[in-house]
Amino acid sequence: MTEQLRGGAPPPEGGFASKIAFVDASALVALADRDDASHAAAADAYHDLVRSGFRLFTTDLALAAAHELLVAALGPEIARAWLAHCAIHVQCVTAADLEEGRRAIEEGTSTPGATLMATVHLALLDRLGVTDVFAVDQGFLAMLG
Image 1: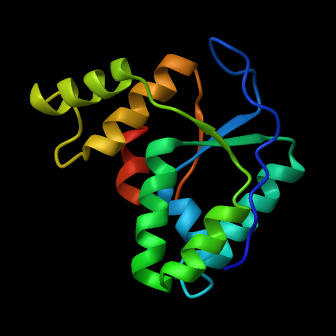
Image 2 (image 1 turned 90 degrees about the vertical axis):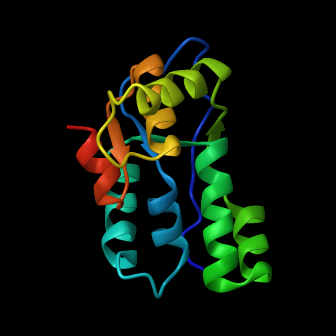
């Protein structure tokens, strides 16, 4: 376990200002697990974002997914400690985000092979007007265009 994320103040109601970046589960895991192949690059990117004044946030969905992956990779004690110290702002996905993500998969309008979590996150990012993303999952990054 290594990086403790700082998220800053919660976003304004109805959306985000500039210099806001979404942190997905892949980046959360890469930061937390020193043995992860992407750890060093993720740590550097995290520090660059913070130095550049970005406010970081994740979602309830991404936080839960990252915790699940950390339990499997590092064990429940380390994952529990990580969760207790992860101070990033958490934005909850809405029922509308979930429905839009689900519809994208059902109707085939998403990238082939896209996961529900990825399409829900894309819906949330679109709703909030957020364009900056911190991720190491190449599939998710490819969906961003």
